[in-house]
Length: 360
Ligand SMILES: [Zn+2]
Ligand SMILES: [Zn+2]
Image (cartoon, rainbow, N blue to C red; front, side):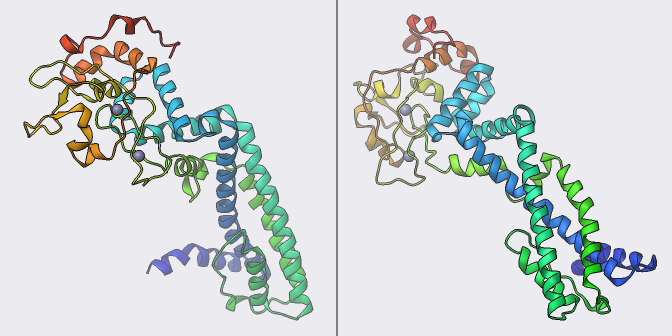
């Protein structure tokens, strides 16, 4: 039933064309153009998407490095917008926020900042396919004429000449066996292709969203295919570029205060202000599981279970200004989010408040 349904329009068009008194050559030409239109649109969209992704990978700073570079741009954009919800998404599901960033920037690049460039890439691919079609029509027609072939052979020749660039399912030629003037068939097809090419040239770039290749998805696949495990203390993302890099431990270059992830002093509302790299050098202990009273010294954090054992947190005093600014700027929102406070042992050092957004 689905097969018959899918053929309905096609057969209706054939029927209608014959009713108008058109010859078989005209009808087959029309049918061919209809098939070529569908596959041309798809090929042009896929090629344009691949080119645009490649172009952005070279020229757009956020996409022209590795994931760590991408992350810096994600954080820069979050800070510029002072978007607390975005920050929370980033802290809890960093990959989700990175993907949202890529989608947003790609949209802006293609539809606002580089509209003309994007259109020109599409037009170039339409032009290439136009030349390919015209060449294939000529070659197929000449061969069929020379070998005294039939319409079936003409369709097969054409498909095989185009198959690397355009794919379409074959046309059943039993209704067209009376065609013998292949020059006329070629002319009729060429006539129809003029409007096909015109239509494809004026396609909206939005059409790319309907096909297999999407510029944002290509970039997501290239940039996000790495380790996304987050630090059990501060939620910073492991920077390893391999998805599964065991036995190498997870590692972060830029730790954050653990309060960002909601760590607090047991039995109090005091959020932890220490960076995880400071904590692991201290003589303090932590309780890895809410449902257990077991405390583990920070210095032996790797004994706290699988989630901790797979991390290499190097004691370090370097603290990124960015996160100091973040905690100060969003203190209230963080406190409300976790229903905890930066007070007592979690008091924000007054020196942190001196940092401006521009400084980070
Ligand atoms: Zn950490
Ligand atoms: Zn990792």
